[in-house]
Image 1 (tube, helix red, strand yellow):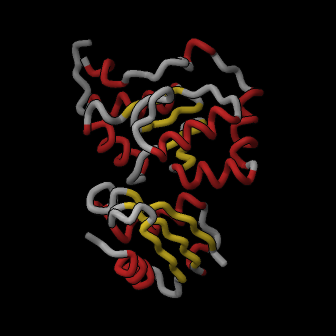
Image 2 (cartoon, each protein chain N blue to C red):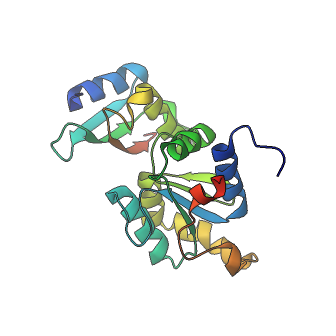
Image 3 (tube, each protein chain N blue to C red):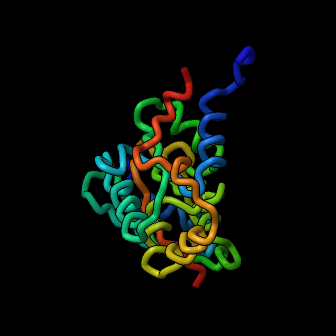
Length: 130
Length: 75
């Protein structure tokens, strides 16, 4: 790459949102969440057998900053489905309880999901910055 | 350190007619849970409703207010 993007962190986040049908930005990893809200959000997705990409925002403060700038949402976790912000832990929990989250994610099973594009291991977004 | 009363008052001032209940659910003065009922939410998505409330606090969310858990409803 001869050209350096103006804001590589923001571009990496935008690309991750675009490339992953279901993606959760969280504190910690799905296996070891660092915050109760992130843990609850992961639990809701797992309860619905959802395959999702995850990005740990903790390694670099710019991730949280740029994510909030993109999403106009101040807190983490943040769940995106098909490029759209669904919400944080409160909305995820509410939608899980009401069945709306299952509906939203169930539709995804009809779509073509490429297992390679949805890594089981958390995506290390900071590795994209090198 | 904001108090539940202060958070309640600020939301009520910013969103006219809002009925607000706030609790400090860890007792530590930085994790709050608010239930906000406001006619102003009618027709808005949950995301938009929560954004209206978060906007009251701006940069304080994630700072002095570590977490503000929300439940919003229009009536």
